[in-house]
Length: 202
Image (cartoon, rainbow, N blue to C red; front, side):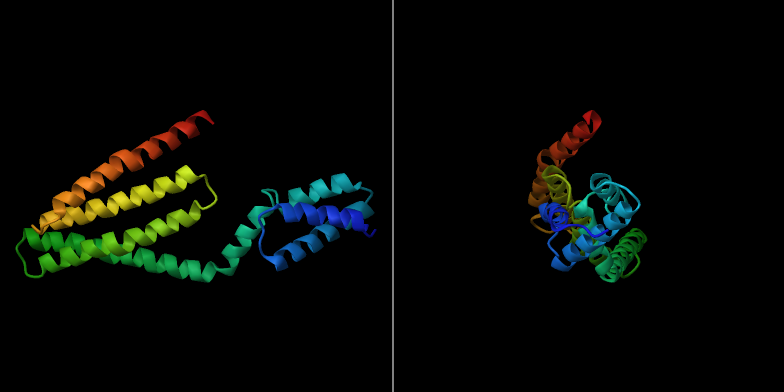
């Protein structure tokens, strides 16, 4: 049984209401829906029930989820490469910090350089990469959740740099520490507890 133009236009309008921006995906989705519904209607199902079943089978979490999954699949290799780089940087810089700290305690040569470069890499390379990754994961969530991530990682970076400058007895450490703690206390923490409260009452 072929769908009439009116029903095809209805399905197309429903897809257009979504936030799907990839034209080819819209066309494929329309074709997939039409084929599924035609098959169900051949089995005696009315259009309304066939459409509801198509929604349940094809995109149970809504049309927007389809685009999200498609983009992920198209970029999965790139995403996996970025994750490997990010966690490799995190591992190397963490090892550098811990070994550098051990060398400094034992007064062995190279401890200062290992600690400083490792700490800088952790704060200036790994943390920003992790922040971007977490932000992308929570891209579809509410603004307060995204702002919590931005403020949390920003305060961690500022505090980390402040601690490093203090350890190295360089100027500016006090100012960075104060700024980082204020950002953490009055920026990140209110959003953190607000989101915890919202989740507890939902």
